[in-house]
Length: 310
Length: 114
Image (tube, rainbow over all chains, first blue to last red; front, side, top):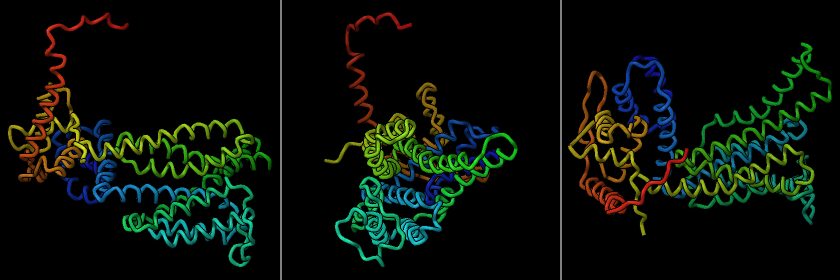
């Protein structure tokens, strides 16, 4: 096998868990070399199978720790994504909502580093602050009145209450001891949440200055809004599709559990505001609603096949 | 009650390839293709995924390794449990096949759809 082909196969093997890679990589490369060493590129069949089996090996290793590990991983990923989504809503006004941004940012870090009880405390403060216009009693201003956004409808508050419920579950000993800290590179997500809309506006300005598009303040504002929508809904739709694929092809139920956690509060919000949604947004949420039972079936099927298929 | 594990087609052919004795990875791929008249073409990813799952259930085991031109080769062999599981699966498929092949008369096949 030529060195370039070997490098490409090694890159495909990065999808495997490190311990499987350490034990198996050389042997897999030997078999690949014996199967066809004169190629320049990995065949599509081999590449696809290495990618799928890498994910499948990850799910198999997690399942070997018990069902608690599968649910801990899936819920942790879900609440992490939901917290990124919550953080993203006011990230573009972080300067005006500095304490709020810091609070949600700290929650993200606590979830990422598998500290569910710390994250629960922070999420509970955020949920109370967000729900304060709806609460019958006045909350102490020092703790909750520092400029956090207060929402007047339960469907918006739901996206801040959901992490509290999920983190309560993850704080239970049976799930907590199965949690793993995730890599710091996840913090690139909020960077992308800021970068995508900024990039959309910058490109629009450049197009405007070259006379390619009309870029008055109204258009720029509209484009910025589109950028924010793209930063939220495009990754959400991609994640749902990927989660379905991973569950069906690689028998990994964890991304589908995470996708369910992410879309459910959004659906509650869309349901309450269905009369005010634009036609595009209505179609988007309708598609997401249809995927919910599919995701549930995917979780059940992937879990069963992971445990019973040889 | 513990659910019975089902053997997928690639795993079945991996186990069957080892019936005549120990083989290394590429040997299993070749033998599976030969035994299925070229129908089952195992990729390396599928093969090692199946071998890992079968080894977890103690149906196959590693019985040795060697270095060939600086490359690692491991040899795999069926365990007694593996032989038993393979025989059970073959008997199950044979019984299923007999429902069709054991009939004296089969209904005539209708016209093929265009």
